Amino acid sequence: MKLADILILWLNYFKPDSYINQVENSYGATFPDAVISLRRIYNNLYPQALMEVSNQFFEKAESTNGHYSSKYGFLYTYEGALQAVPDGWRLPTDDDWKKLEETLGMSVSEINMLDEWRGSYEGDLLKEGEQGIGFNAGYAGARVYGSHMYGGNFYNKDVNAYFWSATRKVESDTVDLGITRILFLKEDRIMRSSSKLSAAYSVRCIKE
Figure 1: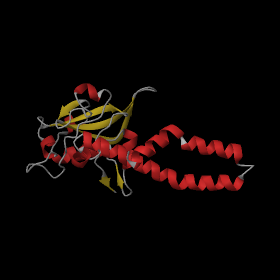
Figure 2: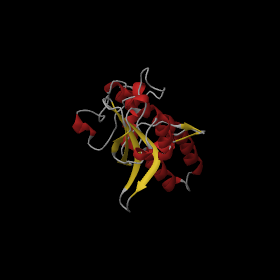
Figure 3: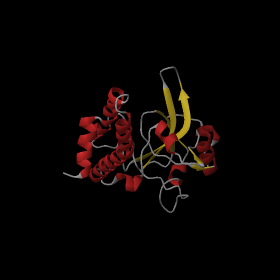
Figure 4: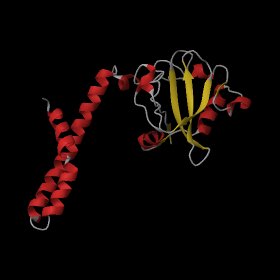
């Protein structure tokens, strides 16, 4: 059994976070020095244990999905995408995408269309290859509800590329959507679409 396997058992069975709180509540007044020492040990070991377990889970996932992230990077929910953006960068807004599409040649009459394919050749310019502008979109697919029903962990992998924008489309108190862009392997246009915020898509950032 590997160290990570032991740590997983420890984390799942002993529930160290609730255990150390219970010790503090029960013995903090009677044995303050001992409890302080236990808390110090816990604070030093617990983050390392979590990191080791996380790495173990990640390596296992990568080995079973063909090392997906090495080729495509990571997929993010809407909130995850906002949090993942590094300092000095930002998630492009819907208007940022429109400016790019207009620069590539998309007509003004099409640019605001939603949930439809728009343009004529602009999608090809964002793909890999000599005809592209260097955006080099990878067909990472997506993680959406029920992805496994489509035969794998990723929906439309190697077929579609999905990208978040920072713009949301709030239709009601119960309907809150994000605006995305979709590229298709056999389509030279770009879809401007709406999506549930819980779906996981690729991200391209803009440097501030």
